[in-house]
Amino acid sequence: MQFFGFVALLLLLLPGLTAAAVTQSNWLQADLQHYLPDWELRLIGEASDRLLVIHREAMTPYQHGTLVLLPDPSQHPASPRQINFLRHAMNQHGWSTVAVLPNYPALANAAADSDDDETLSLFQQQLQLVLSQQAWQAGHLVILAQGQSGYLLSQLDWGQQPRQPEALVFLSSYHMDPASNRELAQRISRQTIPVLDLAHHRDYLHITSTFELRRQWSHRHANLLYRQRLITGHAELETTQQVMYKEVYGWLSYLGL
Image (tube, rainbow, N blue to C red; front, side, top):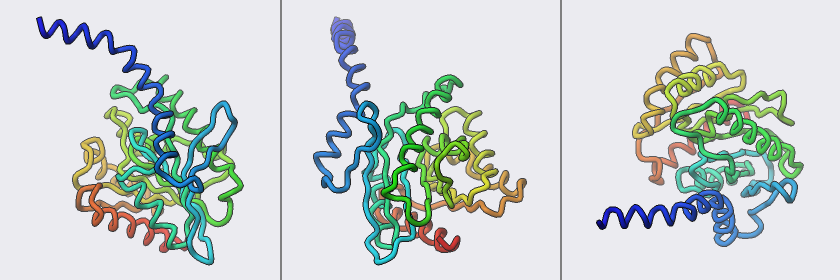
């Protein structure tokens, strides 16, 4: 009897739960506006379809360029899973950072082509909006994508974007569908833009299952622009994030950026 009562209660709450999922992005935006300083938050785009980004300026007399941070759809631009660490740390080395609030839907567990196409289209439009902003055009452009945002980034046609980055960083990138995850490994290895591919020893199974495959594909394609690093430690630990940040900064320095 208690079980059926619980089911009845769940059915009554279901419309509210659905509405909550729809407005989650709005709640998160309001939360960021409450906790972060006004001068870091920017709403870009048209009033009907604005995109929230967190912008921090380089804290050096010179500016190397801009690092655009694209969190996983399940995270946010001030996520403690490495994005927030990077958006602060890189400012001390001449990089301004632009962290984007993902408002495209997370990819489904079983990928459907139509859903992927719709999500990719929305992702491409939002990135185009970010890259077209005049406020961060000076210097080099580097894009870092985390999680499933990396899957979307790997599919982009840079000819349709207002600007092409000089380097790409894939941070624990994956797709939940095994076939799509394998395609991601091949696409990353064929990039004509320099790529730093980062993962952790204790990462998602979707990543660890194909991380070695990415290196093999890059070797097969003789891609000298691909570098892979496996980081020891949990992603949330500050010591691990320090290592990750040094890998990113060291690689950019190696490229002369």
